[in-house]
Image (cartoon, rainbow, N blue to C red; front, side, top):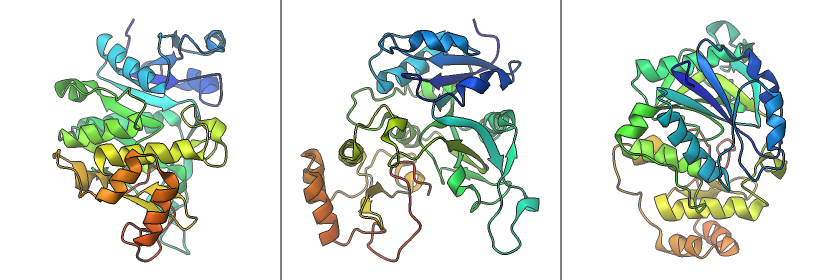
Length: 316
């Protein structure tokens, strides 16, 4: 039964992390309805009844189908919007302010704030900017941002903690890609951009996660090993031609200004036919060798080094 206009949806599987789950009772119940979304084949599905919130147990097989179920179910229940929050997101929020600027540099010291404040700011931003998609910064990037700054179709994070306006998604009949071939969260963000839906980043607030993907593969139900990560990056290239490069550690990455390349257009970036062939064939070794050959290291142009970026939720 819907009580509020917006919902919090925490996706869970095998009871991997508990920081968010253990603090759901602190979320403002006068503004947000809370759902814990598991699945019928989760061996821990009964354990989630110990937490605050309504447990939903759809008959889905994976995270792709689960996200699409959430989108459809929140729409069916009549919500204005919903937060999609992964279970490895910590119940911790930070922000930067003019007062938190460091004296010795141009960066800012993040200060902890109420998690509800960050939620409210994201909903407020969606209304102010008429945006259908709102994210915040990852904590590791927050100190290099600026206070009171909203990025429109720039500095976008596509994973783990996103707010969606359902009227915008429904207007364009957007659905999650449930094929398992591409990253479904990145795919949804690009769909929003292609259909001219404003995507905003609240760049003076940030969230934290329990572990980085490469340091602990247990933080995701999507990847069994690094080869799986690479294959999704390659499949994303096949579908959207998202530029690929090697970082300073030789790791395959996306590096893309998504708003510039995809907003209000279905025209894809220029195709490298050799790269496309390698990606279609899941030829990881061949792709890495080819990127080295053509100088696609550190940056897409093989130029000067830039700061290390995350594999798919890089912020540009």
